[in-house]
Length: 232
Ligand code: ADP
Ligand code: ADP
Image 1 (cartoon, helix red, strand yellow):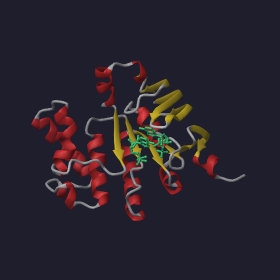
Image 2: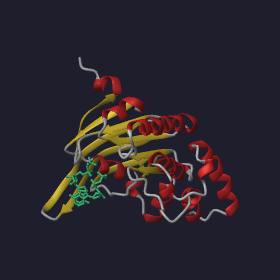
Image 3: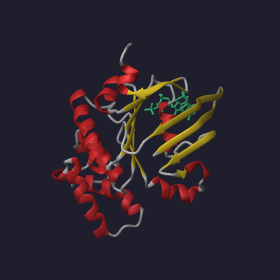
């Protein structure tokens, strides 16, 4: 489903170039929940942002669902990105929009009719368990509820891939568990491929099938969670 080949990313930092990714190869199969773990500064954010080309790799190829994103122009990329939902550590919700409007936002941008939007948003509210909150604003919600909105919004365009960028790092352990269960549930119900980046081992153990450990822009180790985290 996702194939990264020899991905490199160099930033032009103020004190010279910073090579954040130094040749990453990774293959993620359809329906897998794949974790990427590493310390702060290891390159996790850069890597996950290369999967939807929010960051353009300096070298290498990004293939998602058979399409080479690194060979596309901007309008082709916009279309291909509908296939890739993303959720964030700080949720990135529109504070002046209601729960319903936040979820509807990508559909509205995509030019959907009011009726089509309504038909799409109601089942998503149901899926994430927020039916009774649809007229509330983000400031009236708990962190876990905000992330549920983020998840519903990410799913609005029927993506095949969900990218989770430290999606539970701002949540308490109990809420983290509930959000991870929801992600797992969605993965199974929708046959969604999920990529999770985190600095927390517990998140990986809780839901991931496979894991890659990233250190200073290279993959130090990868395999099933059992293989990587069981000491011989
Ligand atoms: P992580 O998500 O694992 O904390 P990042 O991908 O954010 O790691 O960062 C990897 C490295 O790239 C770090 O050294 C960071 O300082 C650097 N970096 C990230 N973004 C930029 C940027 N926009 N400009 C310059 N350096 C950056
Ligand atoms: P997170 O780890 O939650 O993604 P960061 O604080 O690492 O947040 O990064 C926030 C933003 O700043 C990102 O867009 C990242 O690319 C950018 N960034 C990170 N490190 C640097 C850096 N050394 N120089 C410039 N921008 C950076």
